[in-house]
Length: 435
Image 1 (cartoon, one colour):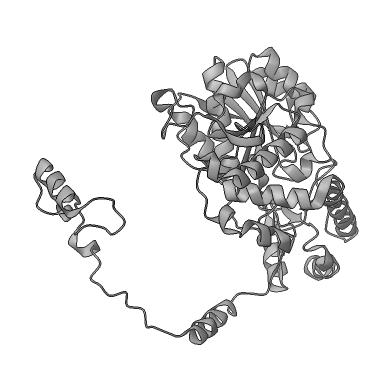
Image 2 (image 1 turned 90 degrees about the horizontal axis):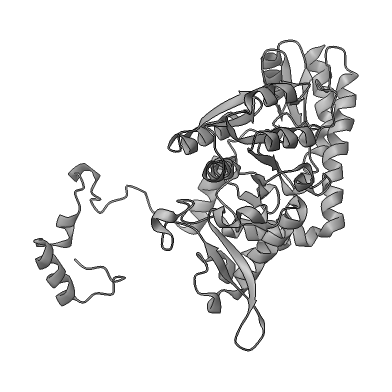
C-alpha cells in the first residue's frame, strides 16, 4: 500500500519493490505482530464538552502548591504577547530555514536572538541554539577537545547531576573524563582547580551556580585555564547576564546555559541551549548560524551562513550530530527579551537578587533557620540550614509550599517575581514547622 504523501506512482513503487525482491512495502519492515495496530484505539469517543469536563476533573486532582523550586528550572512571567507573536504559523510551523527566500521572518528573529547573546556574553558569535544547557555543555567539551590537547574536563562539584550525566555521555566517545573540583562557601576552590587543570581541555564554571551563588573567582579561573592551555567555559543565563560582567571580560572562550528562562514557562526539562564562542572558534560551532547579507536588489537579507552539522553538509567533518534545535523557543526568548527591553531585563535581574536576599533575611530571623548558608551574593535562590531538612520539606509541602531538601540539614528556596507574593505565607509556614 502506497502512502498518499509519497511522491511515487504505483508503477514506480512496483519497480522499486522488484529491484529489492519484495512483494509489498510492508515486507521492508520487521514489526512484531503484537506491536501492529489492529485498527482499534480502545478510547471511548466523547464530544468536546465531555472531553473538557473530563480533563478539568483530572486536573482538579493536582495539589494546590506554591513552588519555591529552582535548581535549573526557573519560572518567570511570560508576557501574553510572546504567545500571540510566536504562535503565528510562520514561526510555529517552520523547520530549519534551508530556503531563505521563504523564511526571512524566522531567520531575522533568530539573528536577533544571536545578537542579544553576543551582547550579553561579550563573545563574538552565538549560534541559533542547541537543545538545552546540558547538551550545550557537552558540545562545549567536544569543541574544546577538537582544539586543545588533554583528556579531562573540569566541572564544579555543584553541577546538576543530570547535566553531569549528559556531559559524561557526550565526552565518552572523545576519550575524555569528567573531573570535579570542590567549592568553598559556594565558590570555586581555585587552588585545587589549578592542581587538576594540567591535563584539562576545558575548565567549566557556573554563575550563578546550582545553589544560586554568584561565582566571584571567574578571573582567576580564566587565568588557570589559560595557563593550562585549556578553554574556559562559563555557564549562565540571559537574565543573570544582563547584570553580570560579560564572561568574555574574565577570559571565557565559551558561554553556555539555558535561554528558556525567557519566553517559556517552567517545563522541568524542555529548554533552549545558548551557545556562544569567541570568533577564533567560529568554524567549530555546533549546529548552525544565521547571518545577515544583502539580496540581489541590495536589500538586507538573512540566511544560514554556517551549517557544520552531519545531517546534510559536513558528513564526516561535522562538528556535531545535532540535526535540529530549539529554534521556536529561541525565538520566544528573543521576543520576550525585546518586549522587556534593556532596562526591563535589568529590572527583572535585580529582582532576582533583591527578592532572595529579602526572603533569606526574614527566614534567618526565625529560630532554627540559618539563611543563607553561603555568605555570598545569590541569584534567584539560596540554601538555608535547618534541623532535619527532609522533615521541614515534607511539612512545608503539607502546608502548600514546595522547596528542595539538599541533604539532612539544608534546604533550598527559589523566589522570582512569580511567587514573591507568597513569601509572607511561606515565612509563616516556616515559623510553624521549625518551632
